[in-house]
Length: 237
Length: 192
Image (cartoon, rainbow over all chains, first blue to last red; front, side, top):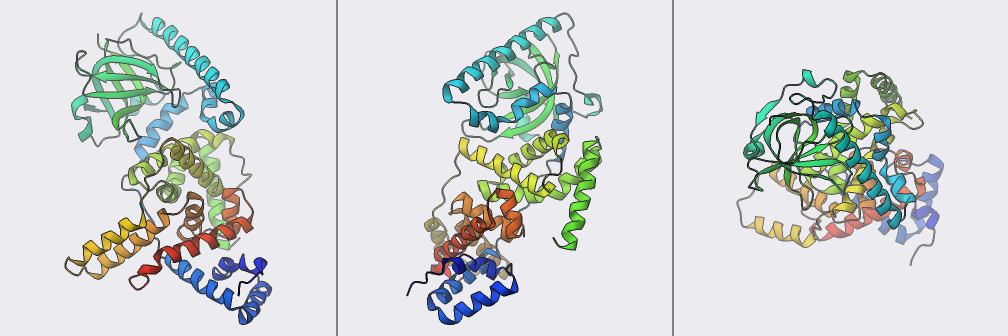
């Protein structure tokens, strides 16, 4: 017969885990003496409890510290007003879809405007450009675009031509594509600038050396190698 | 709160305060203390190792960015678990986790019957893998409470604080999860 003591049934897993006060344990055990339905239920939960206790603890296969440290270094330079972008959930909750689209367009225009302004300012001094704090202390491993898949170092420098510059619609970051040959679309590396005020995007067609953190983006429709975040850009020509 | 937990909480507080004042070593120490916990929760939420490693990086970057605003209104552990779960939810919204039906696991066992008898270690690994996959077959809500309870070792009250719900909700989700796990693995009971 089905037991209707919902108040006691709810506490069964707590009972199994020894997280009940002695008085409640006594109430449950007294009830179990008289209730076959709850005894069957307890047996099943005890088996589930035993199985759950066998679940393995997983550990990461790679140490992410160097990548986190480098990204954190780059973030130190981000002014507070840009950090507002890091709290999307509150914004998302309060905005409707049309509102979100308008906001995205405004953000895109502001970022592009800032990027163009900075790109004009930086045209006068080619060579080493805007540096993130602590950048000089980092050791960058030279990689070619075609062979970045074999790289195991966290900090890399890659040289190539800029084939396109755009704003990533997922997170609002400024991204550009680096290719070996301007006439070819592959192989390429996607480079992401977190702070376009501090680091201007390069012009399409220019040859640049990009310094930053190497990572692989395995999101659906991505599956490519990235320099993310970009810590510095040197214009070669 | 147990004495050991209080000590951990005090150490966390010291590390967080040092990291807030710009001590990079303190932030690294926090990373080392919480890396496995964040990864573990991400892995069980997302079901992919590379994806979980990606989330691990994002979570610590978010912790780094938000640390200056952390005011100890909750324990640091509670805060970082919440960040992890929110990030996993965001990731799953963008890309749903692949569905692995239990039949696929059962099929795997039949295949292995034709091979040589594996050693005890291999059997144990397969056993844990089967239980893990059965858990992955459940909803994220149920999976999360099981992982926080049985892998992370949190109490019902601590889980309730992480999930921002009542301890009674944690209890009823765990009841459902445990009976679901038992029902899914009942056909394999003799093997497990």
